[in-house]
Length: 476
Image (cartoon, rainbow, N blue to C red; front, side, top):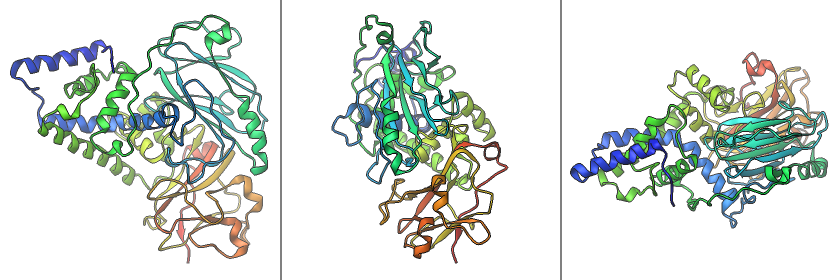
């Protein structure tokens, strides 16, 4: 893989070369390597998880998760099942379109059809860092038809006539997640019709001009599952840095530190070429970085509105990090990637999550049955719709169950059995309840699990915390 280093990276390369010229080895100490690796793991974990998706969705044509090549819309008028394993904590409320864009040669033009006023949809635009840098859809651009120019950081052209808005990505490669609301199984044909009307074309195609020459195809490394949790991580991070090309403003020193390890420099990163002491230091640093992620998750597991604080734009996450008294947003991005990659920004959707019951004990359907009760008139405040979804605590995926049900949502409110006082009680357990309560049953695995509530178009009271979801309570 050939790269042209940026000036900052070149400085790092020269620094390494100078050190080697002095005594044959780099002056980097194991302690420095461990600290750098720890920082790099937290910063880079979201990007490496992003690469896992990129490789499976756009590069590996033999992958069961393959969607299609770059710059091609890929949609499925179906809901996710336990067989979908590429993305943890997936959504099964809205049929997806998912595709990757390569904006190096020229921008792409996205065209969306007019949508029914009551139907929620959006295009979530995600850069290589995993920032949700923009949206197109019901809550941002409305349900009218429109065309949008998606441009990379180096494009310096002007917005063509007929384009409603230019949306610029911070990175040349970007991921798009499209969610289109489904009003029950009988609505699948209509959703498929809507998805077919989502169009993407290069700017040159819109203008009728000659397409610019295609840039060289990167040498995408084969994804090896599990690499995100061992020393192979650093090779994938090195590759992602090559796609970024240069550090974001203010992050030049980090690239220089990584350059001393050989990451982010010209050529491929070679872990085996490092001394045994530095290798072990990097393993220790990676372990410490992952421990930092898990510690943050554990310390905030009882905050049902945490999702609204860890997904968003670069600017939003910087502000959110300050609220947590963090120096930067790296840990927030890493936690987001670990617990629910590609979650939405709060204005679009929030995800109150349940990892423990009302007594603070981990949720385990092998030992307990649970309920969630909404008092009369206090259903989740969402302008579009809400849902409650079950996930296996070990795999972070959907579970197989006898009624093929992964969630309960507001489109089924009329089917639920209401309590005598007008409240709504949802049953969360492994075994089937009595027949009259089947409509309210959310099947759980015979073991650990967690729940995620989704509010699409959350009302202000859900965003400011004046409304919080009821707790998960052990059933008597």
